[in-house]
Length: 291
Image 1: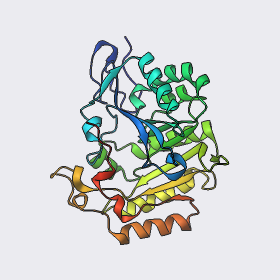
Image 2 (image 1 turned 135 degrees about the horizontal axis):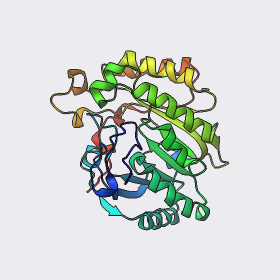
Image 3 (image 1 turned 45 degrees about the vertical axis):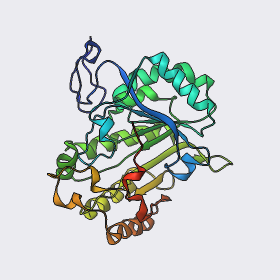
Image 4 (image 1 turned 30 degrees about the vertical axis):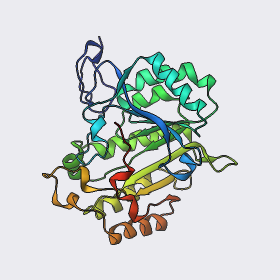
């Protein structure tokens, strides 16, 4: 049986034999929540919601993760590929604007097989919503199956990404992943209804005490991809509710208005188009209820 190398961790777990990988999952696809979601960016959620499917497990493992209930413990319902396909079709039939696959990196091969079967029956876009910490070779399994990529671009600093996500190679890995995503889907395209049909929205969560790294992220992203072809979602929703007491002291508070306003001003100066968040976004009420 093959040893798993789907994500950049390349932990080598024989997941088909029940071994648990760095993603906290084994042989089964685990789905924690599937429902219309109304808290994504406006051209993704729209009026009818985004058909979000939250997968259990995660290959990155940020210490401040707001979804750690499912990302670390892989809580949820185990499904076969056929069951996942039926779930996605059922969700699409509810009238959502798109199917939004959240943190599916460690199931990429199986999700790709599912999408190949159901894609001819879909009339809405499929979104790949991920941490940005992806193996480009694995992403190529999704070519022609994903319409919209919604990756994070979290860090530039090796020290910061090592301390907060155990991934000192995050920046160089995410660079190659985002380039592959852009190669597959190209420039942003909106429909007549204002909804996103194709392209990339890159998210960056501004963290308290990390203003210089956020500035470096914005400069790096500007140099990596054409700002005219992508949308930037500059997020303010960090909350210390999910950080452990042992986390760096700067993570035990919320972002200040000065920190966020400095980031939005730089994003505008660099020519980004996209989305910002209000101060009220920094609340655990924005976290889905996985119970």
